[in-house]
Image 1 (tube, one colour):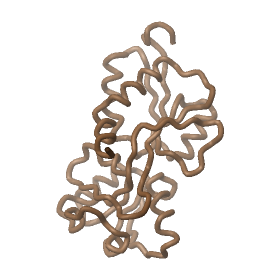
Image 2 (image 1 turned 90 degrees about the vertical axis):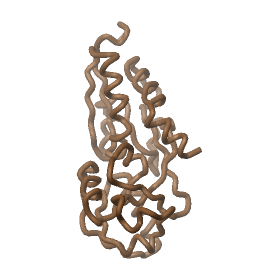
Image 3 (image 1 turned 180 degrees about the horizontal axis):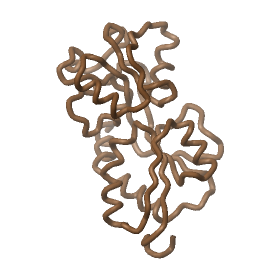
Length: 217
């Protein structure tokens, strides 16, 4: 770990929402540090946090949880928001914002229960008693976005999930306090590998993260 990042292993936990904004940093890091092996785990946040506590991953990239763990530190990367994602020709694609009432008029393909965007969405609609026309639930976001791009279905995802995805439009969901904080989660008072520090530095300076920061400002 002390030999100029020439060797070693870096274990990264990533929620599905973070997948699109990670690619740039992965490719750049691999070019700069070919001796470091990267193990990437894509799982729901609850599973990734268990892996972090068990030291099976060095850090987790995910949105800030509603109920943080005492042993985990969450460092903010960017602010994001929940969006309605549709194909570019969908009637909702031309709107500035989409209300829950408007969304209830369309068939939905939603991320599976347990995924962060779905957790946020369920928490929003539960007290309002609005019935949504859920036709499909998927736990694979890339397939979900592909389905949206070639159908009249709508879905609900964090805006960051659509980074560099062609054929879809993300429209902010018109709900109060529509904020999701993208974070790096690490174990409190734990040793941080040099490769981890360099990877996170590169990620924070990446175009994908800068776009999220600038969009929020």
